[in-house]
Amino acid sequence: MNNEEKSTSLSEHNQLTGVQLFSMTTSMVMTVYGFAAFAKQGPTALFFLFLAGILWFIPVTRSAGEMASVDGWSKGGIFTWGRHMLGERLGWSALFYQWIHITVGMCTMMYFIIGCLSITFNVPIINTNPLFKFIIMMVILWGLIFAQQRGTKITGKIAQWSFTIGVIIPVFLLLFLTITYLVKGNPMLIKINPHTILPSSWSGNVLVGFVPFILAFAGAEGSATHVKDLKKPSVYPKVMMALAICAIASDIIGTISIGATIPNAKIQLSTGIVYAYGALVQQFPWVNVVFIERLIGLLLAIGIIGEISSWVVGPNAGMYEAAKEGYLPERFAKTNPYGVETNVMILQGVIVSIMAALLTFGAGGDKSNLSFQTAMSLTVALYTLMYMLMFVTYLVLVFKHNELNRTFRAAKSKVMRVIMGVLGFVLSAFGFIVTFFPPAAYNAQQKHTYLTLLLTAFIIVFFIPLIMYQFHGNWTLHHHDKSGSDLHHPVH
Image (tube, rainbow, N blue to C red; front, side, top):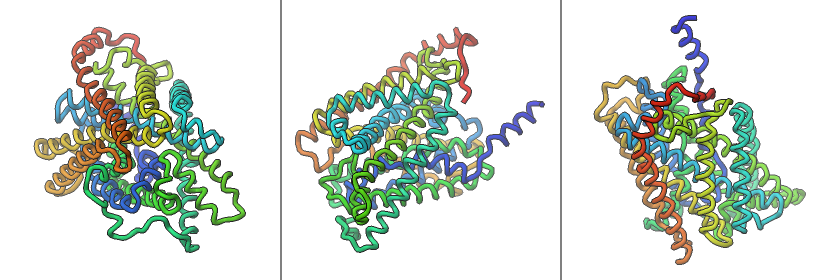
């Protein structure tokens, strides 16, 4: 078989339909661990969902889709796009912030898992005692990293099944229960009208409620690299719009189900969704509420464990590519005999462990909400920083490099493409700024703890890629000296 035939065969093998791309991206965007945080905002959640799901998500996916379709830019994501338009330092920094946000995001996911398991096994101490909580986080984290070491085929199937068991089934059950609850004429604890949907004030302490909504729609740019694999690249924006509608619908279901059945002051960020099921099944006297809560807790925990296993594998491929080009020491450019980037995974695990310790013990005592909120805010601060760099990259492409060939454009009109880039940047900057305002419901001590933890962690992480870049020259030379040596290459 000649090279042209091989290329054609490979292209056909990698072709995707719109439905397949939708399925691949759904697990990145549709999650349940943010529902309680949404419900905390009351009816204003609907306003924030519109901002994040339409005015921000659409520019993210369309601009990323255009950049991924540029000839030679299909691999490497933000790392490739950024360094071509903004230079090596900023391209590397954008990749690092994207990668590190996931490490912090894993803490948020693990807090949710522990909250669910504390209900399933009736051991609240694991969700209230920092030491027990931290130990279980380490078991989950390092257990999943260990499970990935023989390749990703089996764990990929586990992730697919856990998404079905722990996300799709619970969301549809929640939809059924919520509709039944409302049809029976039960009272709602929240009132939805134009006055309650808009924020009660435009201060930072209120607008910080936007934070979890950005997080809910983040990550879809990862699917942009598949634009060139689509049989019809023109279906990409339709797939992303369908995804936005489905994600918004599931988020509305989750928000209303919790907000309508649990008093706002009693909503726990890591367990609120489980208790919402309990409140909703009380309408059926023949159903055991405690059993349902424990079962749902287990299902949701399984779903998020599957999501973490996907995040452990996915982003590390980009860091591995960066390591091969000298952005990390040589040991991180190696894989194990199964083609798994073990050393990059261990680095990720160490950083997650440090962040988990800082957020869990730093909040002190029974502060599950404070730890969860701080972890979520730090995740958004880092990710929105990456998105600001991504939109600047896109605007540079639109204004200065029209000559670059691409198979997809965010819009036919250059004006519309500029509007998308500016709108995406402004909303990313808005999400970044309001992150640093403590929630209005916190007392003075909680606000101080929140800001101290958030600023300390953010400042440390912000400077890490800039410091690492100073060693880029030395690491690159070392890589070149050892080229062709004992490096294994991944076989994903």
